[in-house]
Length: 372
Ligand code: PLP
Image (cartoon, rainbow, N blue to C red; front, top):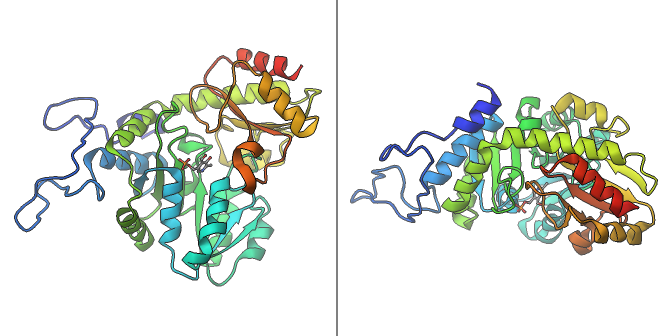
């Protein structure tokens, strides 16, 4: 079945009690069971599993092409639950442009969880190879990366990880399964902040892990989620599921709009660089072409005049909103170094753009007037 069809129909069976076509939001925290706690209806307690979340997980597994999916309260909840399920003494390799809060989590929590980590430029597979240790259990990729839009060759790094007995995770938040399918390149786990494109309307927080196989690690992560309580709410599961229904067509428009914006700005005299993997000038363009069907709705630009130049543009946009996060219908822009705070490695002259679903001509006009 094609992705568009899966997006519409996965986990969408009409309600068996009423025939309702739109799925119900089952808010109950507890479920009637037999005298010895027999699962009469398949559920016991909301934190373990609930019908709305189960529908979402069915859909997530199908759309990403995995065997098993777990929904979480946030993207951070998903990532942290996975990392906490690793054995003490495990080593994790992160990309140098990993989403900032994962870098902070490794710095602040890995020592007490007895985990080790290295940070390398994963767009250079030789650096991954050099960082692998006998106790490396996970190689974490983010492609395109946030906010420099670096591209890592997923298939190549998967092979390096596999040869070393490590799993490979891809944070597929920027691309979504519509544009990039990491499990088909051999990745073991896909992570999403469903707060972004899956939700799609800047009104829900959620996270997800999709596992190629329901193996022992997947079961440990479910156990971790249950005991540490990183589950989402039924309402949030419902909103993410609703967003998923239109994900395929939204992603194509986000990507077409971002490409139009990137191409229009590429040679702008006030910009020192435009980072967008859809541009032939991007160092990762060839790899991106190999592993993505389009290049996503995110880009970043480097403004001449450093921090002051970037802040000037941020203060002059009218249609783009100054706000963090991404993946909603409205276009957002932010001075990423200010937003990331003290652990930021984002260049001071960088603005990150989440290109929405407005007409690209209006977005380009807004950026041109702000850059003038
Ligand atoms: N991964 C990426 C690429 C992100 O951009 C974010 C958040 O911005 C996260 C993970 C974390 O997701 P959440 O904010 O839902 O916890």
